[in-house]
Figure 1 (cartoon, rainbow, N blue to C red):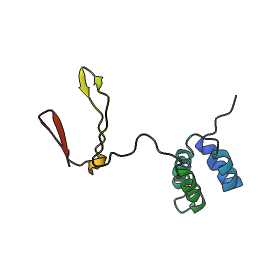
Figure 2 (figure 1 turned 60 degrees about the horizontal axis):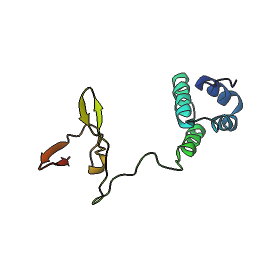
Figure 3 (figure 1 turned 120 degrees about the vertical axis):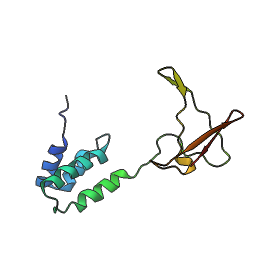
Figure 4 (figure 1 turned 180 degrees about the vertical axis):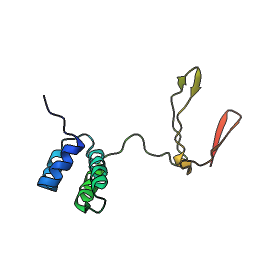
Length: 121
């Protein structure tokens, strides 16, 4: 059985053996950027003035995605089908509104006219 490696273990490895050993240990992890974020949090709590530029550079190398998750954004003129979901007796769809320029906290207006929903930011 494989032993679990914690962020604290990675921090200790980073401090004692350097970035190369940590990079090798992170290659096999499912989400290395999350582990590096945890390491940065621990290191920053210990000493905010510590130079962690090599760790940030390693994070940026792991953060480059080779693929995309989910479908790409809807482009103008394209249509897409969404499955209706039911929660507590209400039926709804999960409609991503970032494709119309909405950001977190924005007010989005949805209107229904003749069976057609219109979404405006």
